[in-house]
Image (cartoon, rainbow, N blue to C red; front, side):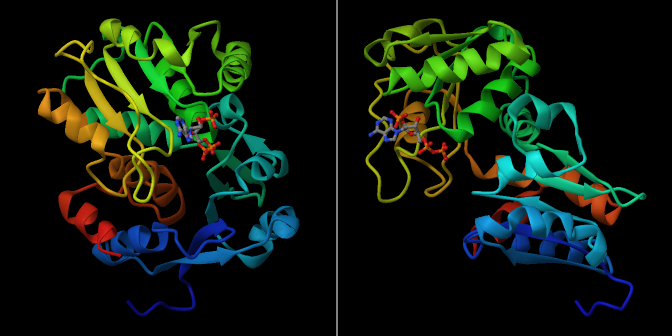
Length: 283
Ligand code: ATR
């Protein structure tokens, strides 16, 4: 697509940023909707991230996505944080407002829940406790989103218990004491009560061993999802499908988290389709 001098410009800021699929994703939508706009990779080292974010309005950019390792510095740099960003202390979407000020949002949780709703129609957050495995950066947004969607409790297990305790205490400050931590050795027995099981660890990713988790106690009605999407069907999802569970793969979270940013920067509510998914995975 050829752009004009009036093109609306946004991008993704990260370090490194070369692996990001966001330019491909937004590029697909720009093309599909015939928008005079561009979405570019912004390769910014950590020591220049705050400076680069503050320069967005001066450069006339509509905003940008923010990826690793800049999500926290973005939260500290923008002028306004919406509720989602304040809750997790990290920003993945920046919108330059009309007055030139910077608004930080976090749409990862939205993406996670929308992906579940699309992939497991009829899924209800209030069906019972959700078991979340892993307490790294990704877990924080996922837990906040599940509780926000109405889950009564999140049961959190992590190989290193202290990290789970710290995350649960942190989340309790904004979301109430709804995250219960269990020991790693209990991770299989607690599945007996779970309505949803989420892997937020790196286990199961290409080049990593599968997540060490036997699903024998999980009720048949439970939905299983993984935030890992390389491969699309992780060993965990394959085992769950084999047992007859409804499974939701991780790529949809990436696709859905992109929707609010695209709408804010380019003025069109974009659609997540099978064609988009195939295109983004094809990079
Ligand atoms: P991110 O912040 O991107 O989520 P991370 O902070 O490295 O990444 O977190 C990775 C998650 O995978 C952590 O929950 C980690 O558990 P620890 O806190 O015990 O490190 C989990 N993880 C990594 N390797 C694991 C393994 N072999 N078995 C179980 N969990 C593992």
